[in-house]
Length: 139
Image 1 (tube, rainbow, N blue to C red):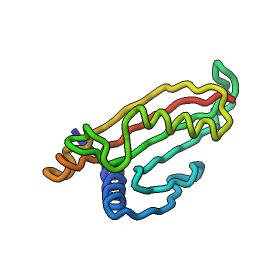
Image 2: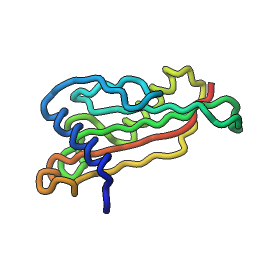
Image 3: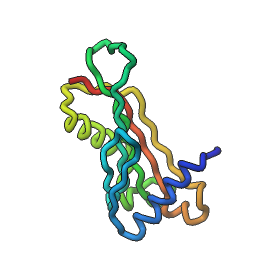
Image 4: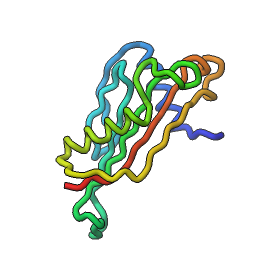
């Protein structure tokens, strides 16, 4: 399985920062909210509101994508520093939706990757894990 340079770099930054116990604030992209990187993992939330004049079946919507990065133990099975499970990422997604004033959410995509193969044999024990949940919020 191939991984691109940006994904490897982000996981490496997350791994080093989590292991050092540092905290920082980072802007992921122009229209996203500041992200806190602590021992609870890295959470990135991106928003998009431009639908090129089209509407959704439910009316006015905003697209939100929440990504979470953490270190899990033993091939990504047990959360260690942070929790990048789908359940926790959905909770972070709905929390971000509530902050935006959503009355409903529609999840259209979710995935979770255990990156045990990136830095063997270290990553066999301390495995970088990423999860993503994306969808629309309806106000």
